[in-house]
Each structure stands twice: as structure tokens, then as C-alpha cells.
Length: 259
Image (spheres, rainbow, N blue to C red):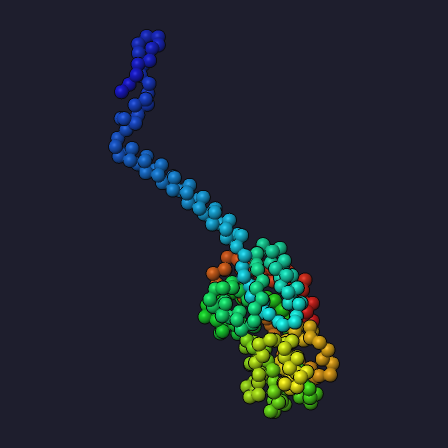
């Protein structure tokens, strides 16, 4: 319905005053759909921003080896956390026995592992991402009571101790039949060596540098291990920051302990 407007001369009509009433039904339905669609678009944008904010604040749980009696592991974990934060990635170090870290990675209880050689992929049943460079490079040392022992084959029937969960140690032990896997790591192995319960042990250079005085024992470098940091595949979007954090860690800490 139109409304008259008084002015000079004859009445005029207000254009558009009755547009909704005269609008074709199909056009009104299109306008309604457009308004509904725009509403859901705004909702989607808002929800996306919320999820993006949550994603950026997620802290990844990274498994670190629990070494009995070694407080420097905690110090190294804190340096790692700080360097990751500087690179833009929040991580939470979680201390646990090495063998358990594989299980927790499989179950998704942790999002990655601080350090493991490339054979980790054969131990887990989930896809993993490896850091672009080693987090650390360490020598593998054979520590023995007998200085004439320079190779695993020289041990004969002597007892060799290796760290439980280290697949590389099994490989280096070369099938030595008198091999004992020790859950407490290098510190426990050292105590067993001192007590005469084992005759030799395999340790990495980092662990060796934090042990008690072993000057009365022979140490032979058998090989060098490249150790990488790992993430579960679903965190691929964090890989760039993760690698940047590894570079910082190597610069500030890793290089110092690998020499």
C-alpha cells in the first residue's frame, strides 16, 4: 500500500515503502537464504578463530629419558623447552624410562620423543616426523674392566650391560650372549660395574661425561650415533617451529655435549 506525500502540486508516492509486500516470492526466499548463509559464515569464522587460538596455545608433551641420579637431564630438558618456546612452540618435558616412551608415543600419551636414533620408526606403530638435524651426536663407548678388550668380540663370556630400551645398544652388542638389559640406565650400570655384577657396559658419550670417575676402566669408542628429536605425524603443522627449536638447542647446548 502506498502513502501520499503532500507537496507543491499533486500527491507523490514514497518509492520502496511497500517493497517487501510487492517483492516476488522467489526473491524474498533468496534474500532470506542469503541472510541465513551470512549468519553461518560469521559463525564459521568465529569458530575457526577460536580453534586457531587453541591450536596456537597447545603444549606438546615430549618424552625425556629418566636417568637415575642425573639431574643434568632436567637441566637439558629445560634448555630444550626454552629454545622451543623461542622458536614459537610450547612443549612440556615428561620424564620417563626410555622403553616406556615408545609405548606412550604409540598410545598418544606423549606427542614426541626428545632423542632417539633413526631406528625408532621400526619400534613404533604410528607415523613419525624426524627433526631436520640431529638433536645431538654422541660416541658409543665400550667401558670395560679389562683394557685388552677393545671390541665386543673380545668379551668372550664376560657380562655386558646395556640400557634397556636402546635398540642401537642391542645392535652394537652384536648378539653377545651374556648381555644384560638394565632399566636404570648408565648410573645403575655404573653401580653394577663397580659392584662386579657386570664386566663391561655400553654407554653414549653424553651419559659417560656425567658419570662418576671411571679412570680405572678402559673406554673405547665403537661408533658415533646421530640422535634425532621426533614428533607424531599429526603435529606436522608444528614441524617448522620444531626444527627451528632444534637448531637453537644445538647451538646453545647440543654442540657442547657432543664434542
